[in-house]
Length: 256
Image (cartoon, rainbow, N blue to C red; front, side, top):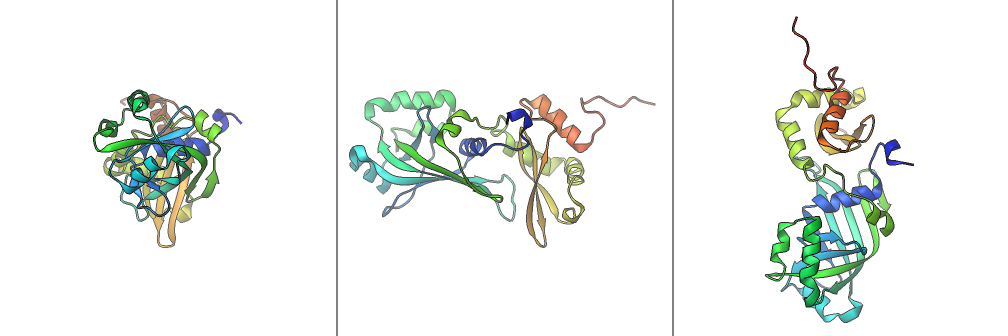
């Protein structure tokens, strides 16, 4: 199946997007306190580069483990950008073994990560933060639809959604400033769902996701675009088409 026939991101794409935008990330190992990971970046070789507080117990344990490393799990939490009743959109669990990065290799690895994703947290490496490698053994993603595994090869060949870095700002703008757009999108929902409170939940190249907060619980609904989009102008046209706007290309109505 080609991407042109898909109406929803693949599991691997969902994981890559969650990794790119996750604001809550934690590394967990047995018998030691969990530690936050401001940097969590998938490297071309299939390992995750993760940063830890240099003084944390987990960092100390990983440094002392030698070449065998320690078993650990990286947990990424993808939060909705709006204040919803249930703010967690998805969870990603990446299991593997954590190893220290040799001192002579740290700078080159930081530069490589920065070239791909200039995370400001990289500036703290060597100054309160230390860099480690998580060799991946398994990846699982869970959301309202259930849990799925994804193989490392699929993860390496997938890309984050082209709009994932801007999604949060766009959804907040839609929720705060364009109730008329949200109302037209909500009009596409089944009649029984329109009685709940409709909020924008997600936006990607395949469509728009809405969260309906009803008296019987929460319901997530995807409204797919006619075809996947890759840039902002195409995204605007797809949303207008989804709304049922007659001026798909942004044309103005003629004055009478």
